[in-house]
Image 1 (cartoon, rainbow, N blue to C red):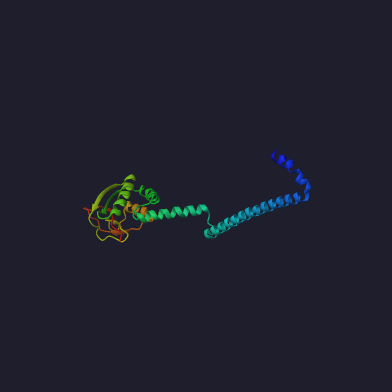
Image 2 (tube, rainbow, N blue to C red; image 1 turned 30 degrees about the vertical axis):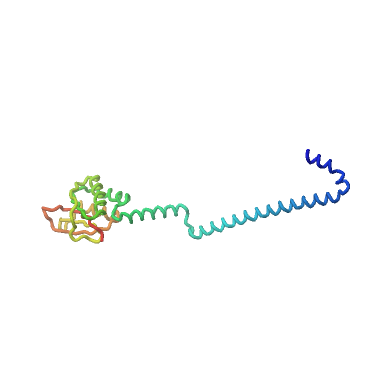
Length: 207
């Protein structure tokens, strides 16, 4: 309504110079179109730039991954986290190692003496693990903490047998269980001694 009233009030002026009015209208309309086109071109260019940047980043990620899938990356991260945990507690058995030992130890339960170095915190942790595992699989476990282990190996774990050249079923099962779990150990064979257990496991400080 305001536009119509304005047009009516100024009709005399417009009638006297119609071409001037049309020229001004065309200039204003054309300027608006040019401004709109300029703005649209700017928006399109910005979107294209963002899409190109995204494509470049995706290509860079694919290059760095070298064909590795996201699932592979997640597995790698999980493996690294597991490795870091093992670095924090190098002596602790993983659940996978315990499961592997469990099936072997269950086949030949027997008596075993386990000792650990009282001055080693790590040996106390792994001593508790193996003691619980053996008892669960039906073994009779005795032993405890001692101050210092005679001739401890660098790996910190010694299997001692006192059956001479003979291999008892319990010794075979224990060694097989450690091998199945990939546990590094040292084995020491001694002659039978009635005052000492036939099968012994020592946990000492790792060098």
